[in-house]
Picture 1 (cartoon, rainbow over the protein chains, first blue to last red):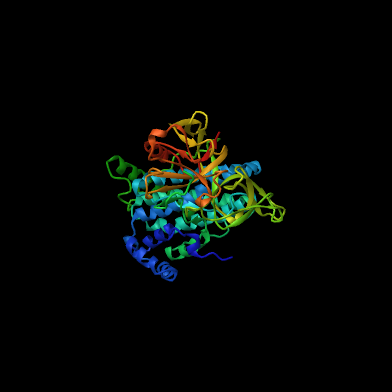
Picture 2: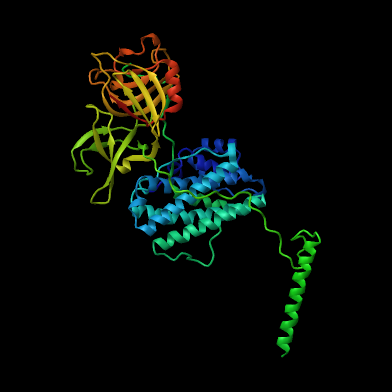
Length: 228
Length: 262
């Protein structure tokens, strides 16, 4: 089954992040969103605006969203007992990566303060629940994160933020190499990692498929019909 | 011989350059200000550094629930051929996303995942197995609510500590509040009419006597327009609280909280 971008990101939080990175205002994004999926995809395919008009806050929020995705992925696998059933070396790998990702989320949230975006609702479609699915996804996710950070880090204006993001990028690259080693793949497959532009992030996003619509569990103005 | 002489000269020039740069630095030159003399640019100090990586702390009081992504038949065992127990829909009677409390997990012989979940059906307390792909993402809570039918109190626990306690009204002897283990599955606000107070929580518990009640006879936890009757055995099965208490509870109790009535 092929999942569309709208199915993968039904609360549009991720799409909104990308749209802002590409030069949309929030209002502009919502106008395009109202046009439907065709308008949305056209917006995502549009060339990125000049680098200097993208705010560092937008980029950090973009990073926070992906760090949250990763942290939740590892934490959930840990809490569900998937990691504890693994062989010791693999267990250590998954626990260390989970702890790192949670540390990344904490620091990005702290830096962003009240400008931090809302936490998305994650639906991992069962991949946190078996060793095999978890491991394969972890490898893909770590490679994905390296590509994303490599793409957005040069766009940060503040050199001190750039330096900090390089610290995250190199750590994520080690994660990716460790993950590849765990599954017996060459840790460094190519002589250079592919730089990803924001345009290409669209393709990356369509592969995440783990950000879902938040469940609607509060109803307003719906008269209770409980027994009373 | 010529090569050796050249190497010695080059080394000498390099040492002289480093010494000169060091002297410049001591003289108050900003390091990195002059690359012409061979000094490296100053390192950019990172704006932040992540704190220590901590392993997950044990969380013994956590319970989990999942959303129902597509309607599916709950079965007695984790297999498509197993006997059906009840159909589970994607929406509650109040129109909110349906959730089910997770009790267990298993993989069948074909590698398909199944979850054992608590069902909001009669008779109360039943569970069934649903295919994982019919269900959405996990969410977790670290609270649980205990309704004591003999003391007529409701107590909310969070990580082993009582964080809320209030007197309640429960079902009259002819319409008793059902005993058992359930969960909170939605919250209603801003509805018309004072009967249910300002907030009403829907639960997975159902009246075993008022089965033809509109909406299926689900048990709610809600406020009231008759606070003078609380505590008491006064309701059709719902758990009633004074309005200030239900408002306080609403600030502390997330959807998905397990509910024990006994």
